[in-house]
Every structure is written in structure tokens, then in C-alpha cells.
Image (cartoon, rainbow, N blue to C red; front, side, top):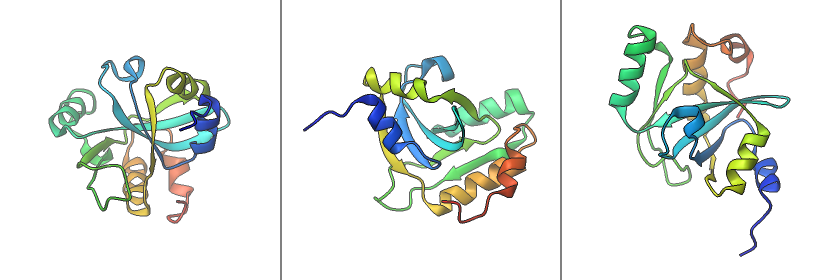
Length: 151
């Protein structure tokens, strides 16, 4: 099996809806890998949402930082084997994470980033709903203008 250069892997997979599985302790303060979904790309700025299968983890964060405002939380249920989210995944749309493409390339170079596929249209609509309902993210206005069939 040929191991492609990290830059080629990232550039070949990076688009809205891509799911990456990676270690990102500098973003989320844990060495445990998580799923990240690319939700928006603006030149060099890439916006991700973190997914977790631990419901209590996201509930604690929402209660602590958002005063029990769960309007921006979506629950992505596994649909079929075509998509890589194999567990019920909770996504906090209040907290988009902004990174640069170089960050993903370096993660791939260090063997801590895996491409896991793309979200489907149902997931996209749920995420769009979560972001447009969140009063804590600047992306709400942008997402309100995106068509439902964007993905």
C-alpha cells in the first residue's frame, strides 16, 4: 500500500462535510481522538465541529458555558454502514473550532489524523439547524443562507 504525502491526503479530502478522526489536545484538552466535521471553509480558515458519543460530556459543557441552552446541540444517529459515525454522536454547534489547513497536514504527518468519509444530507441538515439556532456562533448568518442541498 502506497502512503500518500500528508498534504495530498488533506487537499484531496478537505471539503465541507468531511469527517476526520484525530488527536487534537491543543483544541480540546484531551489526547483521546475525536471525530471532527468540516462545516465551513473560508480561504485558509477551516471551521470544524467536534463530535462526541458521551452525552454527559456535552451536557456538562452546555450547562457550564451556555446556561442550559441546548438549541445548538444536535444528535447524529448512525444511519448505515456507508458513514463512519458508528455510534450516536452529539455535536455542539455553539462551538465551531477555527483552524488552518497546515494544522491538518501536520496531524497527518504525525499519523494522528484519519479521513473517515463525509456526512450525509440528513446530518448536514441537522448541523445546519443547530448552527442557525445558536446565538453563540458567528456562522449562523452564513449557514442561514446556504441551501439545504449544499451537500
